[in-house]
View 1 (cartoon, one colour):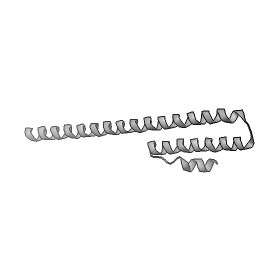
View 2: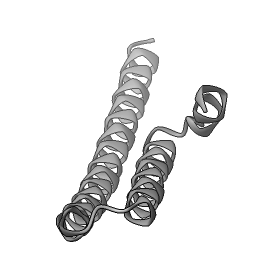
View 3: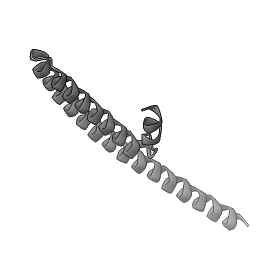
View 4: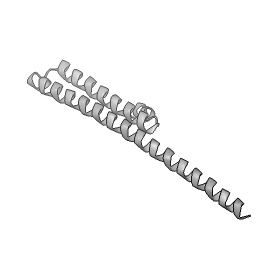
Length: 98
């Protein structure tokens, strides 16, 4: 009987260790994906800032249309990034809003 209790305790310890390892691996993976997404977002925002500075020098309707297209592209990139990180489809709500 004591041997059975000892064996069950060992199995429980192994299961808890494996579960903790899996949680740690998921956490590391999500952290990497988040940092990659953050870097991509910063690059897009920097590009938009440069474009905005260029567009402010000549403010025509074409420039405003171009600015709006780039803003939508940045928003789409942001939404796709959230979709990939969280595994949730935000695009459905975006289409309802537009």
